[in-house]
Amino acid sequence: MYDRLFLFGQRFVGLTPCTLEIIARHGEPAYRLCNKDPFSLRSSVYLHSLFPNAKFVLMLRDGRAVVHSIISRKVTITGMDLHDYRQCLRRWTAAVQAMYNQCHLLGPRICLPVHYERLVLHPEPTMRMVLSFLDIPWNNSVLHHELLVGKQGGVSLSILERSTDQVIKPINTEALTKWVGHIPEDVVRDMPSLAPMLTALGYDPRANPPNYGKPDSLVIKNTFDLKVNKKLWEARERQVVEKRESIWRSWLQKPRTKVEHATSAAVLENSTQVATEIAQGTMTGLLSTTVNESDIDHTVRRI
Image (tube, rainbow, N blue to C red; front, side, top):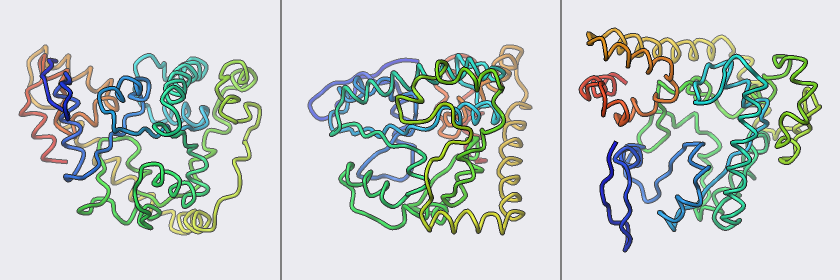
């Protein structure tokens, strides 16, 4: 990985090609560029020094739901043991504490904390707050993202991202309490001391399930429609998952040297972590070692 010197306004900033590729390839050219990378919020103060006009939205979610999603979906994150709820909850607490502190340092005009549960239960007032914070005019389409998936000027999703099979659905309450009943009893018992950020963020660490509140009528309707058309949506989910696995298998089965096979195994082990990079054709860390760029480009074309 190497740095180049780029000019932003009147400031010279050294940024990696990976970062610039991600910004450029997020979608169609736009007046405002958005980067959805949760862990970048740990460095939001530094990022704001590079991009002084940037604003940050810190999405906060019940850590129990976050950890269960990571473990059940096998989302590889450096430092997290996907077989250990206790360890993952500790890691979540440390990460969110760091992000929250950074957001606090930036102040309310630059960084806006938003609770995931509030967004799901009350999408319109929450999105009005977010768009106002970003100085973006209200548009009713933000309440119906599922209608814009894959369309020009709409929502661009990577088939390799493990949450894509859920994001294609309309806003609903299904994911809010999926974690209930899956966390080991000893971990549930120690939750207040194990994950103190739950209390700090306003969650009840002893509630199973917690009462997040009542959903708005739009969300009630969406959730009901999903249940009525359960088989249809399950088929769509399977289609996304099968296509993702097919792409991974195809990429891993390409003829390679012994060194490249070892790298491929590492990629599979960290598939979620590099999925976005493959989809965007960046893969900078691997390109600097053994993976041929044409292999990645081929994968991008197939996506």
